[in-house]
Every structure is written in structure tokens, then in C-alpha cells.
Amino acid sequence: MKKVKYYYNKQSLRYEKIEVSFSKRLLRAFGFLSSSFVFSIVIFAIVWRYIDSPKEREMRREIEQLRQNYEWNQKKLAQMSQVLAGLQKRDDNIYRVIFEAEPISESVRTAGTGGSSKYADLQSFDNSELMIETAKMIDKVGKQMYIQSKSYDEINRLIKKKEQMLASIPAIMPVANKNLTRVASGYGFRIHPIYKTRKMHYGMDFNAPIGTPIFATGDGVVKEANFDSRGFGNHVIVDHGFGYETVYGHMSRITVRPGQKVKRGDQLGLVGNTGTSTGPHVHYEVHKGGQPINPINFYYNDLSPDEYEKMLEISNSHNQSFD
Image (tube, rainbow, N blue to C red; front, side, top):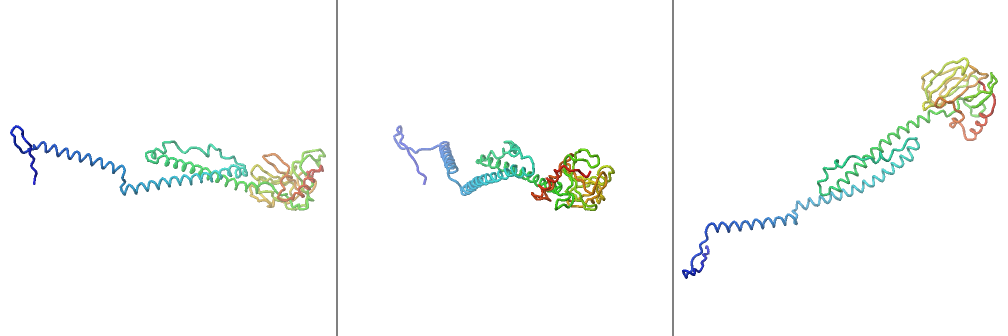
């Protein structure tokens, strides 16, 4: 039952019913609704700000896990950087020294991977600093790993080249000479056997019976194999690459042809007495960069230290050459 309110009218000296107009009732209703709406917004804001929903709590846990993962990845990247630094140090100071290659400059190894705009998409996140720093570390380590990988590719090529070079450099005597009795004359000034004048002898003479096999002293390609009536007679020149060539003179017979590939120890011909020669022997020269050098330095595959000293003594004796 609706309550009826009265008020005391002093003029009429009686109680009269309070009549509330429709506009006042509407205004009161609007005020109540407005205050309720404002109060609801305040309550909702407080709840939204300080009280998480189950979904928000789950998302916050996921964000925290992601942050921890980022920090863990940063630690792993730092460890990888230390390992990579060790590889770079060994690369520059050991591998590249062994294979005579220039070290990679620090500026190349530490060059940047892009400007700050590269990470602009990450700047709008709450943990943007952590994310950007991790992205930079990943890019830096990735670039250094790429450079190191390319360096190892180059080292691998150098290894193969070094193996080829070691097989190509003259390293044995051109005739079997285990007892070192076949050395007739060494490198240096000698008395020419025909002209009887002191003349530079640019190789070593190994005396041996006609028909004794003559061997290639290193891998290479036959550059020349022909006859010279006044010089080395039947002779062979082998190009070993890497600036090395060897000359074999005065053969009785040549058993290879120009352009033929030979291995160390392959037969090139037979000892003879052709050309300007005074007795059966093979004249042997080693050239580096087009210049003759002393062959005595290239018998390390054949001689022990004691044998080398004996060979050195024989080759330095100022005897007469055979050619």
C-alpha cells in the first residue's frame, strides 16, 4: 500500500496531503539513476584496476613465464657468445696461422646488423626493452656464427690446398740413392767439365748407370719433354704449381709426354749421357718463382738428419760438375 504523506498548513490550520508533481518525481528518479550509474562506474573501475579476472590472471602468468624465458634465453646467448669467442680466437691465432691466412678483422666480426628501426615493432610492448635486447643478441650471435661458418669454409679450402701443396713440393731425390754414393756435384760455383772455367752450377748431378729410372720429385704436370743437343739433351720439366718447377736433364730416354699429370715417385725417364755431358748422370734443378734454388733443401722425405748432413757435405764440395 502506497504511503500517503501530509504536511501542516499554518494558514488553514490543518493537515494537507503532500502532492508530488510528475516533474519532481521524474527528476528524483533521474537523480537516483544517475547516482547509481556513477557509483557503478566507480565500483567497476576499482574492480577492473585492482581485481583480476581468471582470464587476466592466466594471461599475467603467461606473461611472467615469457619474461623468464626471455631472461633465460639471454643467459644462453651470453654463454654461446663466450663459446663463439673461443672459436674465433682459435680461428685467428691457430688455424689461420697454420694455413698462412689473414685473420678476420674485429670490425667485420662485430659489425652491426641493422638500425634501431629494425626493432620498432617491439617498442610498444610492456617488456619492450627486454625483448629488443634479446633480439639484438640473437642477431649479433647469428651474424658472428655466419661469419665463423664462412671462415671455416675458407679454412677447409686452405686445408685441401695445403695437402695439394705438400704433395706437389719436390721432396725426394730424382734417383734411388739410399747410400748417398750417387751425388757427383752440388749447387754452386763449379769447374765446367768442357770449358774448364768456374761457372755457376744451378742444380745437382746424380751419377748412375745408363737406364737407371728417374722419378718425379713431387706431383705436377709435365711442362716440357724434348731434346736439346747442346744443353740438357733429353730433358723433362715438371710444373708442380705453387711456383715450383723441376728440371731433369741428360736422359737416355723420356717416358712421359707434355701435359701428362705425374705423382711423386712416377718415372719420367732413364739416366743417360745426352746433351752437354761428360758421363752418365741426371742433372736436377729446382726453381721457385722462376729462379733456381738449391735442391739440397728438398730431400726431407728421403733423408734422416744424419743423412742430410752427409748429403750437405757432399754437395758443398768444390768438385767438377758433369755438365
